[in-house]
Image (tube, rainbow, N blue to C red):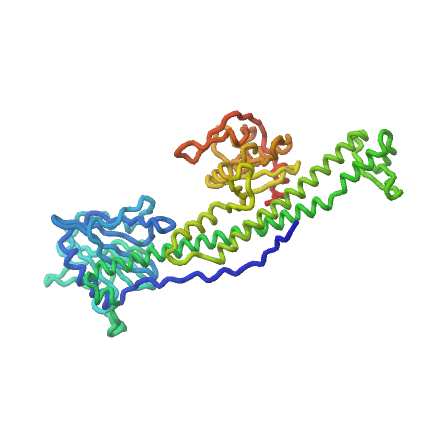
Length: 522
């Protein structure tokens, strides 16, 4: 069987990211540069920016307020994510809107109240990490009040508020601004009033980073700092996700190795069917009769000792010999295939452990994408294992069963697994099964060249098709099967078409499915 025990390696600690966070002096400097550009522009729209580098392709808690005027356009990028708050000026049209983002009540409220409204002023609260954008009047009936967007950029508890402030005759805003909407999802009664903090307890003279104090174009410099930080954050997020998936895959492979080892042990514990067949064959055509326990006592001429051979009373001696030889072949096949799986899964596990032990360096996007492919596809190309065509052979890490006849059956449970199984793992002479006329699981019976699938194996596979397609309660169900070489992927689609198929009409067999699930071998 060869060595297959692999010590569990502790992966190296993943790096951490320190996000760019503004202190109150830096925010004041930034707003002083931003205010002249934003004041006088009109709100065109609020969008959630597209962030292709992130797993979800957008960032929850980040928005872009697109502004425009007669001669210029730009926008305010802001985030109120915990530990990642920021505000920045982006010239021009700004980022593209994400097509995948979900929209909250806060998004919709900002769009409702601010679209088409002019920015009157941009302000910062003294000695606080809080800035505000003030807009034109709400409507004629609300004379004496003003809409504002308040950004609280405290890392531990950032928040964005849409407020309405009452304006006093002298132009000052009355303390206690009515909150119309807030980025944090709280109960409606939690809206209440917002009172401006007094700045007590703030650091007296915090340092200002060079990107703001020394840069020729501080707004562009700060936006660059944010974008670089976001790219680094996306890299680490995806690296952690790939690391988590690889760790889970490694644990699953360890389980499958143990299951395959158990299959070898179970097969080895069976009687020596070959010896039974040889011994009974020697005593043909008239072996000793069965006793009351359905046992024939035969003389082993090699040792000159009697041996008890359990037999099936329904079979004649010639049939019993054939049955013993059939069982011997099945036992050998089960052991060989289980040992082959142990070898394959061990190679995969070693590959996963190597990937875990050597994560790509920060900004090595090609290395990250390669790691993600290994983690998500569930297969690792192994150069040493070549098919007869010379192509690299892919190993399957999905559901793996052994039929009653000892034949391997592979099951895809999702669109990605189906594509992987059918178009990367399957060989032309493998038997491919699918529900007739409806979507569902792809199932593969792996066959040796020139071999056909026994009826029991075919029924096992068909039941797995129905089970993993959610059809245990459908009653009689049609399952198509054909050779994989007749299955083609539809161009520009994730679906497949097939020809030369035959159809089985089956009723889900719960006992058969239970047996298969209990004996899953990979």
